[in-house]
Image (cartoon, rainbow, N blue to C red; front, side, top):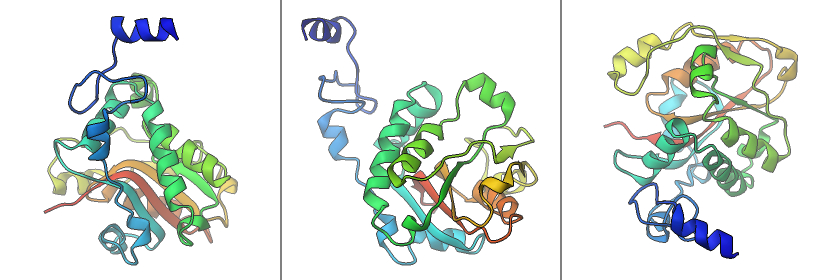
Length: 229
């Protein structure tokens, strides 16, 4: 107890959004910023806007995201820390949050296996981890279903999506994923997880590849969804 208190003084943790020094009871965010982080509850809305966005690209059994995404938002800072600063426990926290909230939804509850949108091996080696792995693992654990990261694989490295124009993202997302170990998902409802959905191009490409496996409905879940203007 004393050592923990001393450590918090000598090496304090800061709120990922506003930079305020955190107390022991405040993981990642101060109470003020945490209160600004409101769940979207998209899975509770029939034909929600994310499902409508993706419907033209994919026929999904469910589509949800924990938060709406805007530049400068708390959600953006959480994803940035998860993706670029090695803060992997954030993925576990957010995965449990989403799964506990959504597991009562009949469509979401159909999921029988969880797959992450994969990184190319070169990017995985560079970053050291897939930023959606802990998010997907936590969802799978709450739902009591398996998580596999060796079924959907990325075979072509593409440049960062962050600063691309939308049309370029759509074009570049083609022909970069492949399948292996398909017996693990054959005939099952697959929940595909990602960190941020913008155009939906990456998910559409994953969907088209996964549809090669017969009788395998696909759903999607993400940490955040960016509403395009």
